[in-house]
Length: 292
Ligand code: 5RP
View 1 (tube, protein in one colour):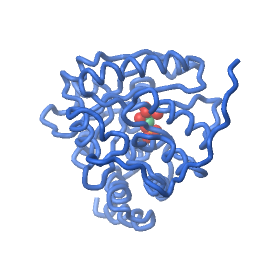
View 2: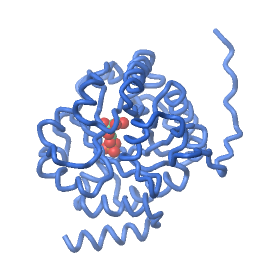
View 3: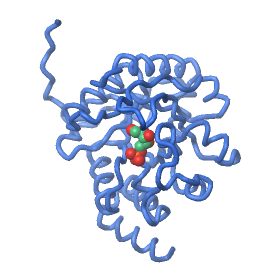
View 4: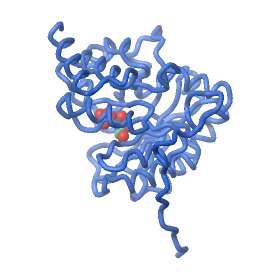
């Protein structure tokens, strides 16, 4: 067994990583097509994104709020910066005249009926992502999970295909039921995903030490939403994440399971792009909700 080094401590989270010539950290030396797709996904003015995640059906079927994507999600499209969805939903339900950047879920396998969700494979050819004019692809990586090595290998194969096509890969830190969600775990998972080639990372917010997760990850991080929370809590979490170095959010249930999804996505966008304080964003949510 090789001796493992101790994790470092010098994160210097207050000093942003330089990215000369491009607005996203760690992306300034990528090729033109890759940068162009990233600049469609992330708003160059704020350097951040509000991605709406609606890929849940790939393993759990018609999730609450996603029973009818044509009715619940298509009206939200003008209000997000990008959509994270499966190619099945894209082809069947998302109008092809939409100008929104589409980031496509590229892994799959086990359903919610199985205990072990880490048993995934690549579930889409890069050719198809290009054919669909995708702005990126996303894949789950199960660090510490039963199928850790395969999920890493899935991602590195996708990264190789993405580099050939100019397609950014978003590596998603999947957390198994038994895994501890703390900064130490997410530092490890996010850094591994970046070192193994993903152009950006989706991960969960943690109350303590999230700035060390973003500081030690050399590419942008977008915050995953997780389970539905009361709106003020979700806005506070999104605000904390961007103030602590995240380049935006990729949120699903906290938007589409809100009883006013359009108001909620507008409030999230205010927090992400305008640094609005969570309480003000909550007031914005309430007033937009009242207006219907
Ligand atoms: C898991 C995923 C999900 O499929 C989805 O995107 C999660 O979104 P949310 O937790 O915000 O509802 O990528 O990591």
